Amino acid sequence: MTGPLDDVPPTEQLMTITREDRGRCQVLTVRGEVDLSTGERLRSTVNTALQRALGQPVILDLSPVDFLSSSGLGQLVALDEEARRMMTSLRIVVDPDRHVIRPITTMGLDDVLSLYRTVDEAVAG
Image 1 (cartoon, rainbow, N blue to C red):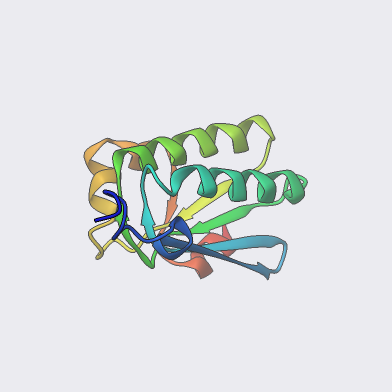
Image 2: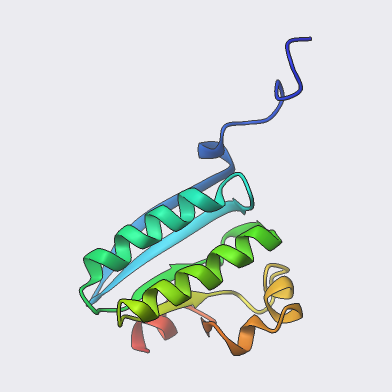
């Protein structure tokens, strides 16, 4: 036995983020897990996108996310606040039929965050 983290995959395997331009929007698609181990990387990537957006919307597609922890929720709130400070829009896509929506609605964040059902809806605004 070499240590307790022997079987834990690196964060790059736990969460991936891809970027695509759709019209005037940047779309960041997140796959995997958003939790304590991956949250800071999510925040850094989205902050960079917000800075480059120059007031244009940034879309964060969480549809392919498998797990969203309470620390991941905290990152979403912090990113939303940062977007508002930068006077841009962070539009978050969450499929209402997937279990990832549950922590968002349980915490009442569906009244705080700008949520959309699809990327197309988010692009349209």
